[in-house]
Length: 214
Image (tube, rainbow, N blue to C red; front, top):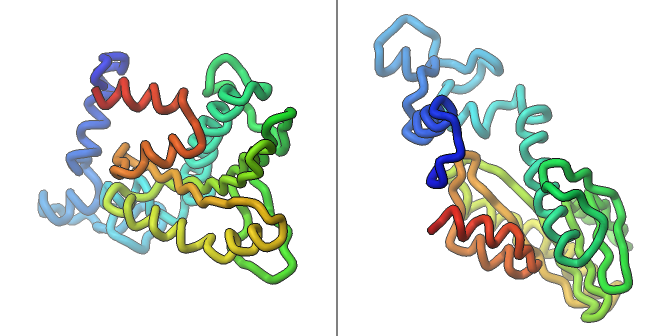
C-alpha cells in the first residue's frame, strides 16, 4: 500500500477490513439495527465479524484458509531455495514446492511427517531446512491467525513442538530449533517475526519486509 502498487478498489477494501468496517451480518444487525441474523451466513454458528470471516470460519478452513497458508509457506520455501541455490522459479508466486530438495550443503523437506520411535502427535511440519555442514535442523511451522492472536500463536507453536524437538535431538544428535512464522490475516506481525526469518536466512523475504516497513 505504501508503494502505491495496488488498485484503488483493493486498497479501499483492505482499509475497510482493517478498520472492521465491512457490512457483515453482525455489523448490520448490531450497529445498523437491521433485522439481519448476525450469525455467519456460511457456518451459521458464530457472529459474522471481520475477524470471523478472515480467520475463524470452519466452512472455509480447508479451502480458503488452507490455500492462503500454503501460499505463504511456498514463499518461504522459495526464499530458502534461492538462498541455498536449490531449484526455484524466478518469481515466488510461480514457485511449486517439491517434497525434497537437496544439494551438497542443505536438504529441504516440505510438508514432512517426521518419523519417531515414540508416539508424538505434533510431528507434521511445513518446512525443515537441514544444514549439512553445521548439522542443524530448523523446524518451521507457519500460521495465519487473526491479528489479535499473532503473539499467542507464536508461543503455541514453540510449545507444540517441544517434544518433537527433544526427540530429534535424541535420535539424530543434531541441533534443533523451532521457528514459528506467524503472520496475521490482515498483515500484523510480532516484534520477533523478523528475527525468526533471519534464523533461517530468508534474506529475500527480509528485504521485502524492510521495504514495506520503511
